[in-house]
Amino acid sequence: MNRPVHFEIHASDPEKLVEFYSQVFGWTLNPYMPGEYWLIDTGGNDGPGINGGLAKRRGPAPAADAPVSAFVCSLGVTSLDETLAKALGTGATVALPKMAIPNVGWQAYIKDPDGNILGLHQPDPAAK
Image (cartoon, rainbow, N blue to C red):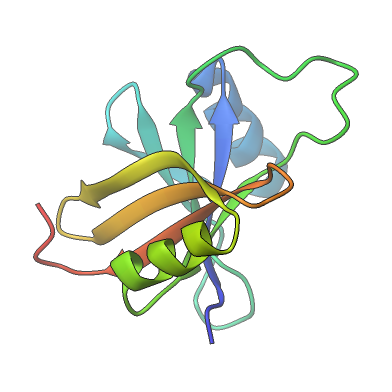
């Protein structure tokens, strides 16, 4: 079963959101790729929930009247290549191609047939 394993918040002004999420929810945000990406620790691993990341937005912020503006979730998959091929074969499109997250795994982003973005994540500590 492919379950949510990670979420992402996209930010036009990441430093502002680092402060917001740490103050409001008590999350710990640590720079992973300075100025571009922060890892979010939402709490102990002894209860339900997942951790995530904060990414510098790759375009303009959603318009105030946009129908949905939300976190992007990533699903854990056994094989990113197989899952990506299956998704593309059933109407998805690539939002961001497969990339290595050094020492963590492989990541790609797709748009489902209705344009919703989701991440696909295959753990692999040897990813470079």
